[in-house]
Length: 217
Length: 267
Image 1: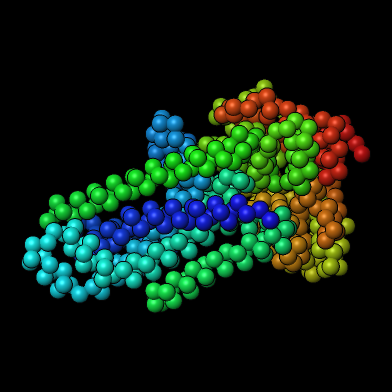
Image 2: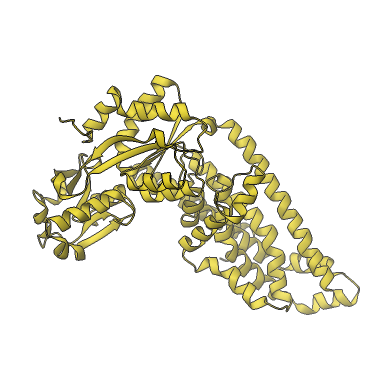
């Protein structure tokens, strides 16, 4: 059996999760704690990858980062290729899983007792300091749950990845894409093996982290 | 207060950029480890999949080259090439997609090569005990679903549609049709029992689990399968030699075995 798709998917999901958490946790906190113009629009836009067809996301992402897209052309000027590389798979997985992190983390921040943050504010703590020393430590379970869900979703992305990263064996063929190819080529044993690996990794992660941190998904 | 919020976002963005750079650098080292970065990227219509899975290793053995084979419907692969996919050479299932790419200056026109002419065949699952001898047998009420590749972007799907139209069966059969993204997926629908019959490429029909019957080639426009080297390649010579290999003695032997012929050839 070819193990490359498994390693690639693990690496892609890990990096996508990293990107999503770093960008998403502060945004989730803003959505939970601040009122600003365009907040509802931002909230809806960030949730949309969960409900939009992956083809729509993949198509527009490709129009942006493809060799003719606005971002793609800029990157080409710097000699960076994004579309149809494994980095595009990271981007695809991050886009698809972003809403899961935002929603889970946002509700975690919302359930933090507001008075604690207000008390810190009266004591002269900066917003950044409140975020790090009060909000994040009190909402860590929600952040962790969101992170695990993000990883699992990123690990399984199919539609967006297919469109922006292609399906290149040994380069961009992630686990879900490899399963698709095996089914098409009637190699059902390999398709089964990889599907079981995929189910196993996701279930193990949710159960293991869930038990260790007493999370409920 | 708003300033702090912005600072939070700013530091977030900085970390994000750092992470992206990190991802980029690990990627560079990751690619250096795999020999596939210098591999010849062959994008090919899925109907040649079974034949190419034999031809590619023969070519690699003969030339020492490293080939990565990417299969999909001709239309989808053309779209990826248009958007910058790293293909060196493209084996399409017909001419029109190559013509379109050529009009956009994405191909090396002088390398345009007819490498095979395809045929379509009806298939049924052996274990289902239904045998199709002619197209009109597909009207049999026991055949509830017929799988073809999507005629919008898969040449073999279009040929299947044309054959049904030419046989005057389109009205009858259209309600039974299910579309695969490409011809391999259409065949998979039949293998899994989801469709009772299929109209697919002859080249993928000859497997132990399927009964197949050739469809009269006069019923559809010729499936002139064209290959072309792409402008972006850095391996023009290797790309041309792969096309020549497919058309050469060794390649033809395999292609013939899967029912592909060139004009003027016969079994």
